Image (cartoon, rainbow, N blue to C red; front, top):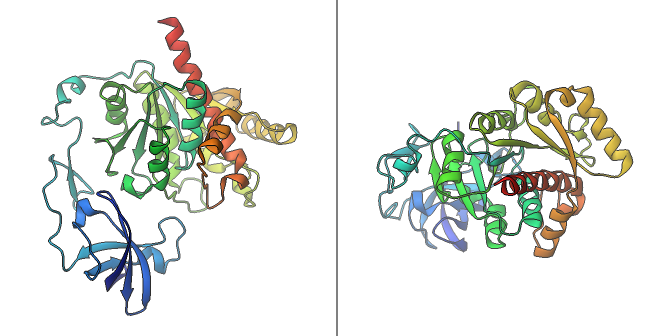
Length: 363
C-alpha cells in the first residue's frame, strides 16, 4: 500500500509547464515534493495538497521525494490531452497522450506500414545515466547528427523527472525525445519500443537512437529480477527492424559489490539470456589492468561468440561533457568517481557514430 499525507505548500522551488518542485508542511514536518502540472494542474503557495510519501518512507535514493497526488484547492488539469491513447492504463493516474502512431495523428499515414528503420544505429543502455556519455560520444564524432532519446517505462514514467535529459537538450546533446510504453512527456509519444524507434527515424529524422529507461533502475540481487534486463529486448527490437544494435556496457571498478564489479551482472544477463540477436558490444579502451579484467569477463561469459565485441575510445565524449559542465551522476556517484562508466557509454556512442558514417560513405 502507498503512504499518503496531507499538507500545505509553503514554497515553490521550481516551476515549469512540465514540472513543479515545492516544499510541503505536513503534520510530521516539511518535505520536498514534486508534481506534474499536466496531471494535477497549477500549484500555488498555500494550496492544500495530498502527497504520496511512499519513496520517502522507504528511504529510496532515486525518486526519494514526495509526489503531489492531488491539489485540494486547485481546479485540476486545465484542459484535456490532445489524443486518445491512455498511458498508465486502469490506474487512478491514467493520462491521455497524442500517440504518434494513432489514427488522429498527422504522422499516422507515414508510420502505418513502417517495419524498418533502414539501418539506423540503436544504442541500448542499462542505466539512464549512460545516455549522457553515449550522446556525447556521438556528438564528438558527428557534431551535426540528429540524436533521438527513446525512453522506456522500466524506470521513471514522466520524462520531466529527468534533470539529465533537460540538461542534455539544453546543451545540444539530444535533439529529440520519444517516450514509449507507459512513459510519457516526450516530444513524441509511442505505444512501444518498436513504434518509438520507427517514429524517431521517420518522424524525427533521427540518424541514431539511444534507448534507455528513465531514472531509477530496479534490482533485487537475483539473476533475472532487474529492470535493466530490457536492454537485451531493445537490441532484439533494433535488429528486427533492420537497425544496427549496439550495446552499452555497465562498467564500474568503484562499485564494491562483486556482482557489479567490472562488467555488471545486469549487462551479462541482458546480453546472454535476454538478447537473441547478434549485436555490437562496445568495449571501452581502459588502462591495461582494467582492460584485461573487462575482456576476460566478457569472454568467460561467452559474449565473444554471441556478439561482436568492438573496442573503442570514450575519452572524446567525456571531454565534451566536461567542457559543457554536465556532471553525470551514476548510481549516486559523481562523474569524477564514475569515469569508467562514462567512458563505456562514450565508446558506445563512438561506435554508433561510426555506423552512421559508414552508411553515409556507402550512400
